[in-house]
Length: 294
Image (cartoon, rainbow, N blue to C red; front, side, top):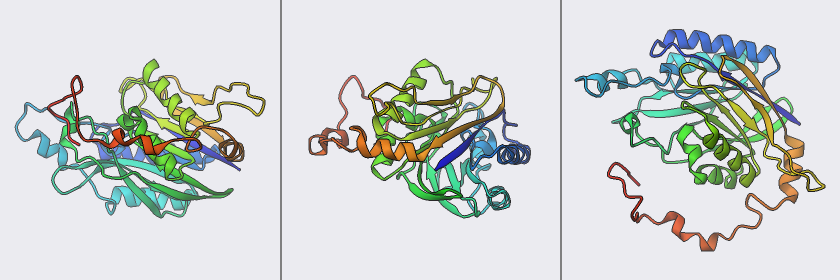
């Protein structure tokens, strides 16, 4: 069983949602012609991960007014497209929410059904993302594919810098974790992402914005770090450069499942009874930050 995920590395039209819809559709159609079964957008695609000038009165309210719902024409368009193309789509957008909007990804299956909408849990509270409502849960759903079912979860950008995000998704059964992104992917963030695949024995796919909006480098790891003889494997399936394009990552789920059934990472040999400090709410120096919430 194999799963081909298309990383849609694009330059957006900023807050022009009609232009972003048209471009997103065109890239999805191209991805399907190349055999993709899942199309993954970069973060907050409907408005191109655009924010506002905090010094301008009313700017935040105008920005928040661009938020949409899962029942909007934008989302319904991609649900219909998924059904037409027989293509699962991980669609990202700024979502209307009571109070502050949310930064979300909706996983749409190849039949056009919405499996879950995940809101970014680790919002960047030190930046303009403080204007967002953080999510409260992580989700995993069974995605129906032509080859059979696969357990798929999602995280968004800054989430991947917290090992707890991928760990919780793995504990909930995720085999593949989809990761929309909107920031520079340099050596340290790339290293973090590879570590998440290794320590959880999960496949990871991440789509970033193309240059000049970000630096591209969308990439995927298959989560298989060693062969049966103990030889180290790179896990790398694809890593883009900075240009726009559709980058395909093909996951061998049979090999991943065999590896997860025999190796020692993931949830095989953990000692959770000793991990109580991970959920403690107290914060001590040097990590106290005035803007942080728990």
